Image 1 (tube, rainbow, N blue to C red):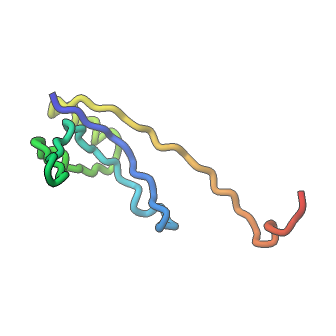
Image 2: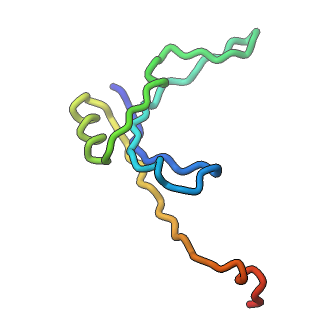
Image 3: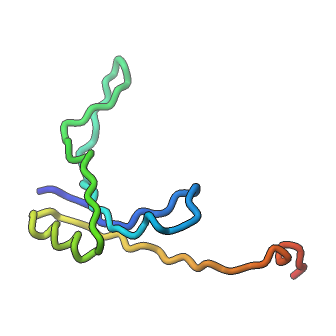
Length: 94
């Protein structure tokens, strides 16, 4: 049976906004790769490692997984608080 992980991707360090992290991702967990001992190349027999599906909500991703008999695990996003500070706060003594 296929296995997948459902999550919201985190923003990269190069992004300041959160516009591209709205969709939920369903990414398949695949078998380990094999390494060629001579060249060091990695090969995989499972082409599902290249499939990444996007959904507008967690419920839609779960519905898709259930309808296609995919075992899934959900990684809930961690909410981070944004603390508004002034530039002058860098120079204040505690």
